[in-house]
Amino acid sequence: MLIFLLKLPFLKIALFHNLNQFPSLSMSRYAGELSRGLGDAAPADCQFENVFCEQSKLVSDLIPGQIGSRWAERAGRLLKYPLMSSRINADIFHILDHSHAHLILSLPKERTVITCHDIIPLLAKSGKIGMKAEGMGKHTFALRLFFLWQAAHIIAISESTRQGLIHEVGIPEERVTTVHYGLNSCFRPALNKEEQEMVRRTVRAQYGLLDDTAIVLQVATKNRYKNTPTLLKAVAAVNKAGNRKEPVRLLRLGADMFPDECELARSLGIENLIIQQKPILNNDGIVSLYQAADLLSFPSLWEGFGWPPLEAMGCGLPVIASNVASMPEVVGDAGILLDPYDIIGLAQSIERLLDDKNLRQEQVQKGLIQAKKFSWASTATNTISVYRNIFASVPVSGA
Image 1 (cartoon, rainbow, N blue to C red):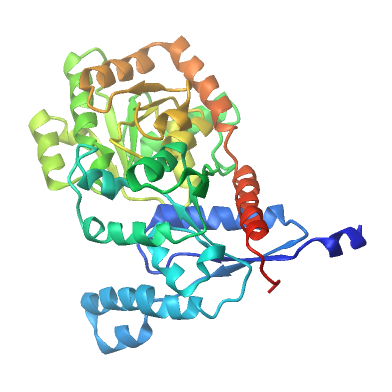
Image 2: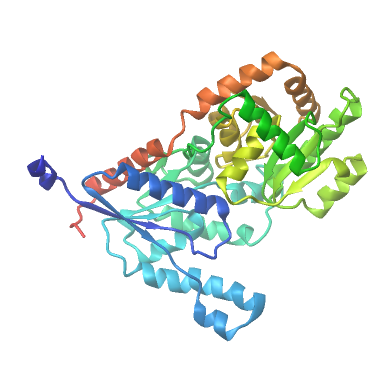
């Protein structure tokens, strides 16, 4: 066995995480889960190095306050990190988020992989999805795509994202591989009926709700593509129908709504039916909400992948999601898929899942089966295959 291992080409892979102060919780989760999965896979011929970088302390010391912090982050990401990256010795270099694609300028391009999580800013700017391009992304995304072009290979986190890179960006299909996100094993259903009832009561008591209050869960960031107005109108329609003793509550996990969305909720008369829960950073707290809610509504206009539907299904929570972008490949036939602008259809689907126990149980069972198709072990294995293919195509000396 030892003789066989000595014959294998040894592969050192450097994993470039986002700057520690860069605000992207989802991408940090991906990087952490993937690096752990690669470590658990532990191929005998592979060694992994995680590369991290802090913002510029020099800038933060010179410029106080929020302005200093902002410029310290930029200096760290655009100056300090590239300089540090140029000193890393490895066979394969993997930039874990396209937001840091500029690091490729400091790396051997023919041996660098970049993970692309979505192309939403490009689609918004070109009018392909019904939202305006906002923030700095609308100005900088074209530059990120330019850096993506220079990579030896791109990992797309869904087939939808892969097709977008091919058809919207023009990257040759042989240079893009789909490797789905995985699902952490902590996202599981309650062990039994007693645990399920206890979690439901505990969560409802936390928000001052009755034990039988119906909860529609939304997991959202502060992005327009989450399509909150459609969900607000659907929840208002369900409550306006007056078919249940207690009004249906919307539990929103994540960033606060935009001011115009708050105004919409007021105009619809459901302002007091919305519970705003700040982001929860530990998985156990998120799992409790999935286990306690009655359904997840995820009417996004677009998603690079869409973690919440997968996590919900893993926890035994029925899902209603949009029928666009990556959502069909993540949800499959295990959830109800609708046009993201179908307010009436969403309201009717919410009522059906709340009232039809047989449909609900069917969706729960299908969701559990679908969720098992996604694991970080599989993500790691498929990612390693990308590394090996690059290594085989470009002769390099071991680090």
